[in-house]
Length: 213
Image 1 (cartoon, helix red, strand yellow):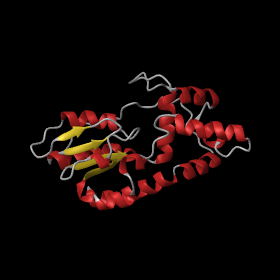
Image 2: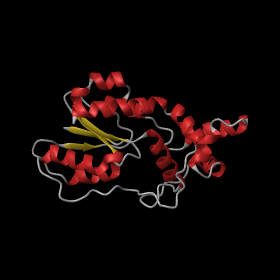
Image 3: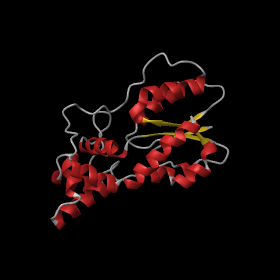
């Protein structure tokens, strides 16, 4: 049994579709909602997940929720999101505001970071810590990365079926090209600080993937 941990904004929706269609006599895949974590994987079972550069994931999560999940979904804003998107038009504006000289603006930015879905989650919510991953690395079936999605999906498919994947698996929820993804040096610095633990865990998983995959 291989449990798929669906970490938000990492290409999981497209991967879920592939896992539902793949056939294997050796592995059975269990698809879980976002809330399912590595700690919930039963002893003796395996787990897999995809990650994404935390800063890129922030930008993707910001716009995904600004669009209310459209076009794939239509999930209304919560109260915090409504306030956030009225205050900050772009991810850069929100990220820069985290170090604003104005206390009220900083407070608004911190509330937004804690209130916008996807933006307010961290890899540790699913994976706990480097120590936990190292201790349970024998349970890890595959670690993929959104940045190398096509290549990693092909590698995963071959690991499951021992055959080459003949068709491409397209990423879901492609962002409209018109979205402003620019991040200033100040914004990047603020995000690097905000997501420092995520970045460290992401880099650790990059190295761990070489042993697991």
